[in-house]
Image 1 (cartoon, rainbow, N blue to C red):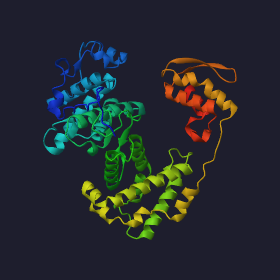
Image 2: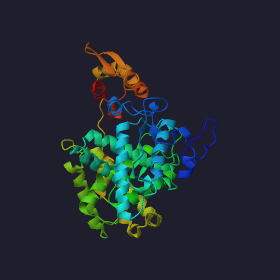
Image 3: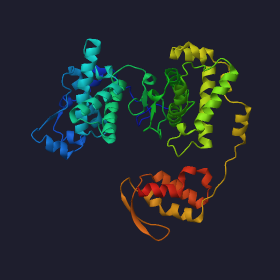
Image 4: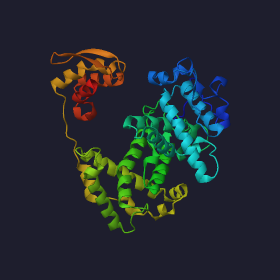
Length: 427
């Protein structure tokens, strides 16, 4: 996979690492987390929350320094705000940043009480700890818990701040972080024009610990050796967290080998298959996993264990867990011959777009191609008219046009049914 390059084709210079090097890049006018959020240049990075501005109308400047914390905390907040402005990472809701600052104050005080000294950096606190204190701060102030939306907003802001500080201001290897984000960390192997660049690999979401570290080693090696694309790594990590990780955690498996007896090992994965068919594995109770989704999960799990068998010594050294050396050839055959025959003989049912669906595809091309949020006047195949927001996906529009003009099978692209897109565009 290619690293990011400049237009001349030469490798992009490595960004300075370490806190002092990063802090040196911040212009003087951005070195204090005190801003006139309704005036340039701060107005370009802060959302203009009229309720917040009205509540603080007496303040010409707004100070987001976390009270009672080491000076570096304020510098790190200022660095992050400047980075959001400089790289166009996100717009910041001032009330949520203020709330996050209060959470940092509480988390730092708790750290000091526990360790007997102040934390040096925000990265000395985990993102989960800061989020927990944000909930406590809100409950103490309002005598109630925050709404799901408010919780989501402050969690995203804290995680974003923590991720960029952890990745950009430390010398930690990219794969050692619990979140792999291409935009935050250009050291991660990637294609020059990675289509899934906005997706993150959530290694930290995987439990139990032995599985998380095993998947970390697997995906790191696969990305370095170009055995997997970025989008595939995202999917594998998500699938492991949702399914095999949840199953292993629920059953209390604390050993990568799971069982020394091959027969017992097969029984464990027979139980895993039963788990995949159960409501517990479904995203929603009324929507169980499809047979193809179950097959894919079984396949990923088998590929993972086969890889770990082939790389057992390196896995044991990388994860610090010698039990990976206990894997045997039985772990390359987690399911019996009947499962492999069933997968080999599975025939995909063919389906075709109807004439009505083809007409619907052509009618919705303008909606797909228009910029997201742009209003598009649309006449439906049944003659009715409506105003629909554009979806901002011209590539999908071109694909639909080719599908409609060439009469391709619907089964070749099951996610592009016109009815689904029509429903999405009406939301």
